[in-house]
Length: 237
Image 1 (spheres, rainbow, N blue to C red):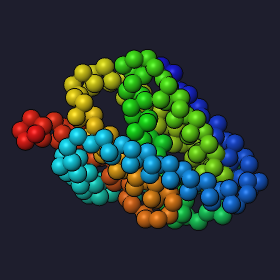
Image 2: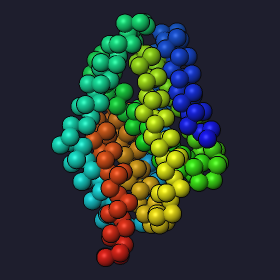
Image 3: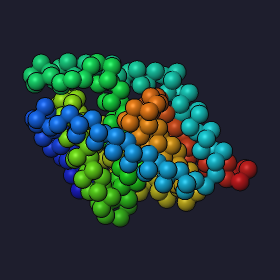
Image 4: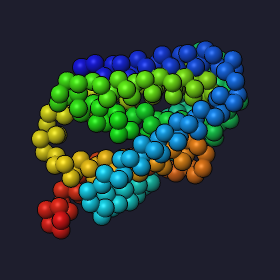
């Protein structure tokens, strides 16, 4: 098991480098590079969506999952936790510069989704669990290294806390891969990928500041899309 550790280390290293450099990075770099990351997220999302097997269960999962997230106030809870974490960390470290409270929360939630529930991370962890090949997670680690550095230059050391849920999710997928994948059909995997792709697309819009989609509230969709896909294929497919 290599990938989850490498990915977590990359987020930590990128955060430390970005937070230490801080204002020494030009403002243009700190404001324009996130737009590049957002564009990349949208591109990856589109590439994942076009692999969809059945549109109805994928769309239904997204709607129901978002409804669950809204009713549970998932994004609000994450924002509150992020705000408390920021205050705790900034007692011991220099506060992030030129970022107000609302902007901090908006960006923090977006990169949390990008780091923790991206298709590359999910499939990379499951792939390593089944085959022992950590290539996908190492590629993701390289991307996360630069992403965390740029965002940490503005958001500060709080970005490093995202390595914790990311690591837990990847370890869980790694350990559960041998149990999950034998039950999954190619069609279910395709619908899962497409659902994740829509969330990645929404995340890209949010990072670029185009539209503030409630991406964290959409995450529960990932837990119900495969069962719905299986039911659809069995009874209506």
